[in-house]
Image (cartoon, rainbow, N blue to C red):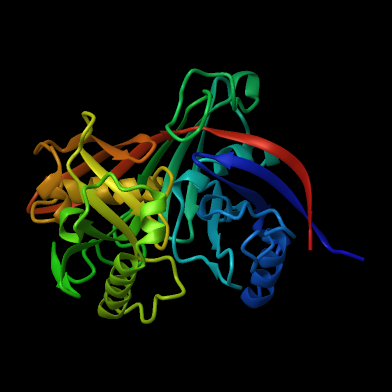
Length: 355
């Protein structure tokens, strides 16, 4: 007889995947990962035997539970399930999938809904950070689709979900700048290594001989370029004490150029071996933070001010993603207060995942 686990399948932001109750999974990580791989159908490039969609943005999984932390409603653990390898990576976070956490918690009854909106406070295991989420709940029911808010990369409109992230600096390494520098020369490339919302290697498109307009096929076909980027990423992993990151998705890669359609900066976000069709929220937060710091690769290219608050518009291959960045101090010596953005989500199905 097959085993089964309660599962809600959701589109959250520009990603999609199963949402599970963390308490339904074994505490032993190896056994837990074995179950998650089976649920998603990995390792298999088609993921034909599971819920994975054979793409980076559809091979994601969320685990949530009611929190015992003071002032926190629910705990959130994100997992990137590698498609063609038996690897479940919980080092990174995902801001897109995060947008489904609060609706999931409300639907589970872990957080009582209030009219017309409900605030849910979430603790993120991946980055040791806190997120305040505001969900539209007219008549004390989650509203997913009735709204006129849209995000690039998702067709149609829906109800906005507000996410305010705090404590985002140093989630993976303990430092905003893991090397202590705003920029470094790694493998012959000038890069900024930034840990804010997500850990990223930021590099200028022009330094790679790129325009910033290259598409998914370009990156798939240019093996030599991708090998150089990967070698640099792996060297960074060693330099900042993460060891061998060849089988991890951190650090992510942001190839930056000047904005072209009225935004603040343009980013091609690698995941890290493929071009993201849109952009990660956590990556936009990281880039937005870097834009506000004098001396970074991002600051060279971005149109920013010296105010404590700024809406950073990150252009990406499918449109734009806005993030509100609030800092204290000045651009030479500052800390990040919080970062905010809006997403939409939609519940697709409720039932059981079998393994």
